[in-house]
Length: 430
Image (cartoon, rainbow, N blue to C red; front, side, top):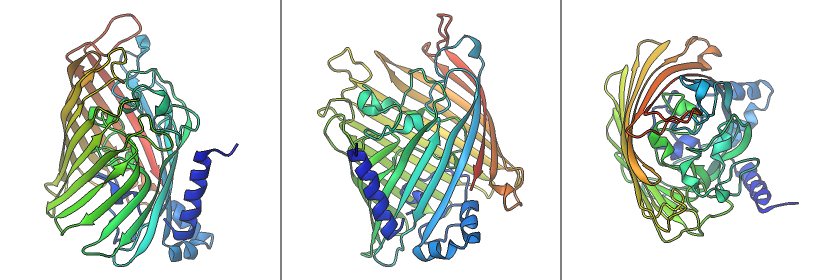
C-alpha cells in the first residue's frame, strides 16, 4: 500500500532531482567540527565518493548541476565498568548507551547536496540518510520505518534515556529539505522540509563533535524539525534565523496537533569568535497543546590560538507540563539547565587533545537532581598527509559521571551515584 510518507519521499526525491540539492552546515549552530569549515560561498572539497564519480565520467554532470555526494561510516565501542551487573543503559545516551559492551556500527551516512548561490535566485537542498544503531533513536514521527516512533512514546523528547535498548540496526531519513536563496538585501534563505535541530553545541553527525559520547545537554533537546525557516544576514556580525515546525522530532504525524517556533541569532563579534543564541518555544508534550516548552541555548567557540580552541554551551529548558515524564500526574512542572565547557588543543597533525566538563540540572520523575561529567579524549589522524588516509579518525575517551541521586542502576538491585566508561570510535569519511 502506498502511504503518505511514501508519497512525501517520492515528492522530495522528484523535486531535488529537478532542481538540485544547501550543504547541511548552512543550518547548523557553530560547532567544533573535525572537518574544515565550508561556507555557502566556498567550493566544497571533493570527498572520496565524489572523486570516484569523477573517475567514472559522471563528475562533469554533477558539477554542472552543482551537486556533491559525500558520507562517512562510524564504528564504536563503549565499556561500562559495571557491565557485568548492569541491565540499565549507559546514561545519558542515547546513541552509545546500549546494555552490554559490544562493537556497533553507529552510522553509515550518505548525503546528496547542492549549495545555493548567494548572489542570485537559486534553489538547492539536501537529502541525508543513515543506517546503523543511531538510526533507531533519530526517527521522527511517521518516519519510524522499522523501530522507535515518537507517536507511540509518551515522551518523544527524552530520546530513549532510561529505556533499555540493545544494538538495533535501522534506517532513517535524517534530513530532506529545499533551500531557496532570495537575493534581497544582504541575502535571504528559505528552508523547507526536515532538518537537524538548531539547538545544541553537539550534533548527530560525529564529525561535528569532539567526542564519541554525548553531553547531557545533547540529550535534553530534539534531533530534527520539519517545517520552514528563514535566514537573513543582517550584516557581517549578525545572521538571524527563525521559523516554525510541527514540533520536536515530528514529521508525518503530530503528537499534539500544534506547531512550535525555533530560531537562532548567529553572532561573529570578531574573526576568531563565533557564537549563537538558539531558541525554541511551543507545545512539545504528548497529547498536550496547552503547556509550552521553552529553551534558550547559547553556544560560543573561541579560537584562542592556532592550536587551542575553547567552547561553551549554556542551556535552560522550562516545560510547563511534562506529562511525558510523569504520566501518572495530571500536571507536572519541570526544568532543565546546565553548562558545558569544551577544550581542544592540537598538538600536531596527528594528535588533538580534547576535554569536556559539564554540570546539568535534570528533571527526573518526580523530582530534580544534579549530574556532573568530565570527559578526556584524543582525536588521532594516523595518516594526515595521505589523500585517502587523512579521512580516517580514531577517538578514544574516558568519561566519569556523578549524580547526587542514585540513577546509575545495575541488575543486582542496588543503585550508584557514579559511572565510569571507556570508549572509542573510528570514523572514515568518503
